[in-house]
Image (cartoon, rainbow, N blue to C red; front, top):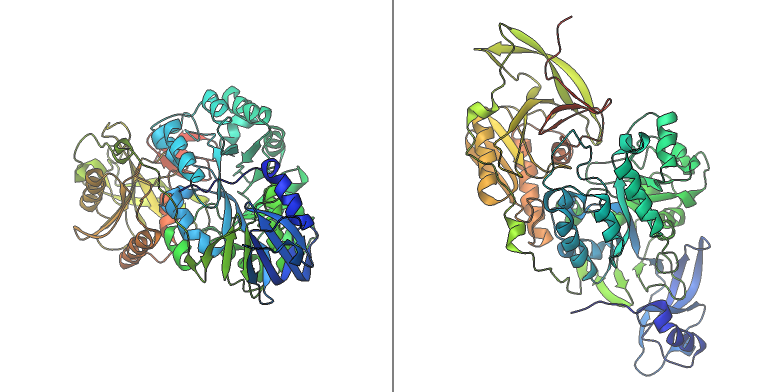
Length: 599
């Protein structure tokens, strides 16, 4: 099955003929309250006529477009809004392939996604990106790919399975579904004039495409201005109103995210709702959504509804999830609004505030009704090599997770990663920890974290400490989703459980496993690159829900704590992280010792 759509140029003669009444439309929808995001109006009684998957006529009366074979739908006075666009997201964060991700979000009204597959780039390189790109193009909705920019995200601070080069970026810019460069996470490299980072950005600009941004530092001084000068066109790393304002003042689009664990809309949307800044430069996105969120809570409809609940005018909120996004990527003549020539992506909803998604059309075809998908989402034939990506090199034992104390020490002052609920940044904390028989012991609110190398089978284990999860008893959780280098993160209170959890993922080819008292109590298999499952979203969501429940059984009380777990190796977001090379101080972008040196 193919879901190809002809270009506007190819079908312009028919669009003109339908709009003029000389040729019948494929579809006419009447009796609607059309939300025009171009003019910020709600137009009562307006109608649309669709031909070849595109809008031909948008106006008060489409009767002249109806002929033999035209399907006519009565909108029953409901609102007709554009299909929703996710301006920045990572499909792999849903633990699903593009096909299954699409199947999960289509019933929620998402018809366009701008996806950065930098997770799979770290594991499988350019070949993995191409597979994601190719499956994306097979779908009945629009999934545009941003070529990953940073693998590794911070050279010298982590080791990835593959590295992305400037030549890779230049090659990918010619692929049909590439819309730009993925988030430029190596912001220190840009600021310092790193030749590869600037070459990647230049190749994107020469192709006339958009450079994605990622500036995770709170410093809005000279460093921020230098980063803006490098060409990043947007940024989703803001967490405060001042962040949003600073970005739009520099000509960036401020992307405000609501994911499974990131709640950054409420703190930034006041730049529009209270400060009165021009909303055209604000975009809504999800960044990272787990399968459970997609199945149970929604996708971009959830973000729009949340923005409205935060005081945003409903039509303005819709603009931030439709036309603003399309315009940002140079696609405003292709999608993002209900206007002639655009792809006929639209939603019928009975309420603009609560936003129930009752019927979804993509390219003029009904793709979901009342929460149920009505089309197929084709799968790519993922080769066997993509399912064999976890190489531990040896069976791990409890001693691999022991942390020797400095000679003669009875206690140590240790650097500890502090988890912050519902936010990506961590805190750099210090705890006094006891020593028993020459080994440092995690105690109280501190538990142990280990980064296990899994790309080359070196057998390497880097150990450290983390606080904030609340784990108690004898437990461990291991995951091969470990943004961005995607080694294996193991967090636990017991070295034996940590070894069991790590070996389990080595045996099955990746995923997430939770152990308690020496027994596995939850498992999410992720066989493709150790990142994704090609099982249905509902199946993965149920497995993930059981995993979250198991984390709670082990004492964790954080909201969506797994997202925090999976980001503990993300060495481009402050303040403290862990990598296969050691503990990383992300405020200075340097490796730092686990123990503080006594004064």
